[in-house]
Image (cartoon, rainbow, N blue to C red; front, side):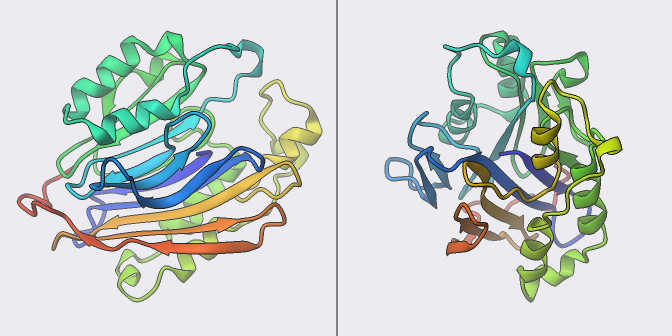
Amino acid sequence: MCIAYLAIAAHPDWPLFIAANRDEYHKRPCLPAAPWPEYSDVIGGLDCQGSGSWLGITRQGRFALITNYRDPAHVKANAPTRGQLVSRYLTGHEPSQSYARKVHDEGAAYNGFNLIVGDRHQTFYTGNRAEEAEPSRLAPGRYVLSNHLLNTSWPKAQRLRLALDALPLESLDQSLTTVFEILKDGTPALDHDLPSTGLSLERERLLSSPFIVSPEYGTRCSTVIALHVSGRALFSEISYDASGAPTERHDWPFQVADQRDLHAKM
């Protein structure tokens, strides 16, 4: 997962809205979003190589997503897969606050990451690369997360945030087409706006758009998750090939198993 937009308790009818792109090497095997074979209450994609996930939600309303923190100078060759931080939360029952604290305390074992975990009542952000990534509860509002800290104003993050901030969430009842069109923004940043993360200029350019297309590495899927106050949930994902063309779409609408207090602030 390389960029995600979240609206948390920002709309009276839609207390949770997530729109995200997962960027990865095309040769890395994965399974598209679906209920997990051994945990049918969990819906999300699966990384076949690392046995983890990048984004998912349960039928009870627990959700998690992770992004890598871009730090090529400090990559650990034998670090455990970060995707398991998502899958362990989704398949467990630990409250989001204590889980975020535990992950942060054990975070030095992993390569750089940002993790967001939540449920119908609260959402927490944490990571392992800066003091600002200490576990913190997210207040109602709108957030964007790429491969730096939460709300870092990289050009791609700003483009996605501006476009989705302007989206009326009540339109989710009609269609998700506009959301997917926004997620497929392939506009690169100008060179003078590029972040300096230790990569070559060419690589920084490639990674500077919300949607990435290249033969070896790019956006593999776009995902939309939304919870309505009624307990109705939307989960929709489009997969893409190396040319950026859509290959399949999966929709997994469901009803949250326990609707009580769905409208409570997350």
